[in-house]
Length: 154
Image (tube, rainbow, N blue to C red; front, side, top):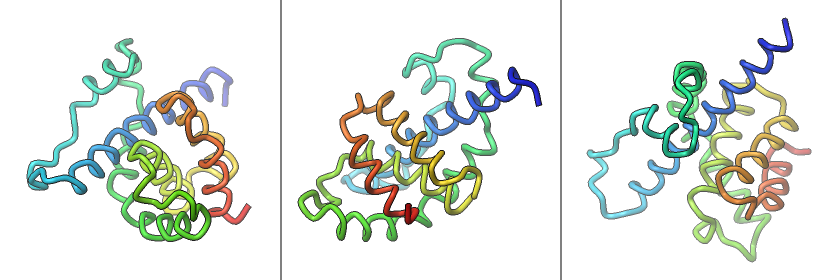
C-alpha cells in the first residue's frame, strides 16, 4: 500500500469521524431538548464540511461513507457503558455536566474501537484527542485521555 493511499484513507476516515461527531452531537441535542424527535435529521454532508472549513470538493467525495453510516447506526451501543464509567471515574464532573461535543467524540471513538473494531484502542484515543483539539479547542483532551483509557482498560 503506497504512502499516498494510506494518507488518503487516513484523511477520509478522519473526515468521516468529524461528520459522525456532528451527527451524534445533533442527536444528543435533540434527545435532551424539547424539540420533537420526529424531526431529527442529519445535515447534508457537504454543508457540514463547508461549515467546518473543508471546502475542497475532493474532500466531500473522499470521506469514508461506510464508516460514517456504521458509526451513526451503532453509537448508541456504547452510550450506557461509557456514561456509567464516567460516573465512576469523574465524580467531580457528572456526565450531565460534560458538554455534548466531548461526549460525541467519546461515543464515536468508542463505537469505532469496540463495536466496529476498525482501530486499536491507543489509535482511537489519539484520534479522540485530535478531534477534541480540532473541534473543541483542546478543552477536554486530558479528560478524554483518562476516560477512554479506562474504557479500553489501558
